[in-house]
Length: 253
Image 1 (cartoon, rainbow, N blue to C red):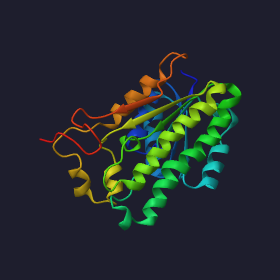
Image 2: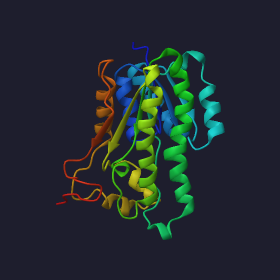
Image 3: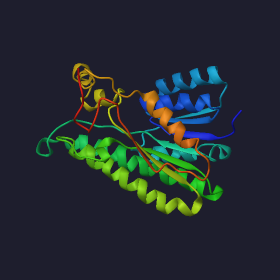
Image 4: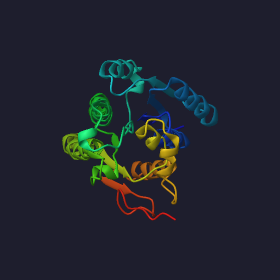
């Protein structure tokens, strides 16, 4: 049994759940963080039964600094030697021009995608520093590489993540902590359903006419990155469906 520990935020569905499956297959002990207790428990029970793993589940919203800190710091000491941190929690809300944007949507995106990532990273990086080892994987987006119509604040939040990747890599270099950016294009998860606030038909239309990425594709890429030799770091990976050229240009049938 692998003694390494992976901490995954946003672990209740999509890329986070796929990463939990991937690292479970590799024998990692898991710390799964998410907002939906029932889904966390379902994932934990299934993986424990299938792989015989030790798993900690933490019900917490990365936007809530106090609750998040209490949950993480409440872990037993031997669970704080985290080897892999996957900052996956993130969302997009709304698709409106800047003059019509909902400020509550803006807060949700900035608080989750930027501040939540920072809150988790500060705590976990301080666990890694004494051991002078660790690997932080931040899930960004094609939206962190280019800006598209009505994507304004979401794109800004992911551009911030892109900058944080670079800053973290510099700041944590003396401690041998790797930092990798994973930037997907269109992945069929709950992303569009959340963006369109539960409008299932509108969400489905995003992926009609071509095959988007699947959560498993991103988990595979993350495992590739993590499994490189100690002297190798993949700084930045941009992953697109073969039918997607830019954030907004796709080849639909």
